[in-house]
Length: 160
Image (cartoon, rainbow, N blue to C red; front, side, top):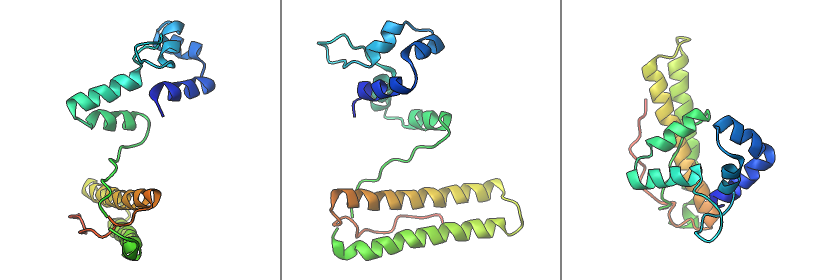
């Protein structure tokens, strides 16, 4: 989806007039954001395009992390699908289950004293990020119908 198309959809839920007022910008500028900026139309480089360009030119994903945090979430970079063949599908699903079990073990260990320290919290976060990355890689292979990359070395993991 192009950024201007996303903004068109957003403007269907929140009026362009309301956005213009909140941002202190003209209504025409807000509408220009929802038009293609291909040099031939009246579209203008919108904030989404500018953020994407900023991340690309700086090669610094902390910008994306910050935006995700502001929206109440977090950023996980999609792994490169490097896994090999349907024969490796079962070990891959087993790895996801094992990662989840490892996460639960870390949580259970941390919670035994009915409190979670900052270090325990960091360890839980690290295990959670690893589980999400492994699962995302699997899902990408499913979407591509290519399970060739599923046989891979287990990444370095922070296990407790």
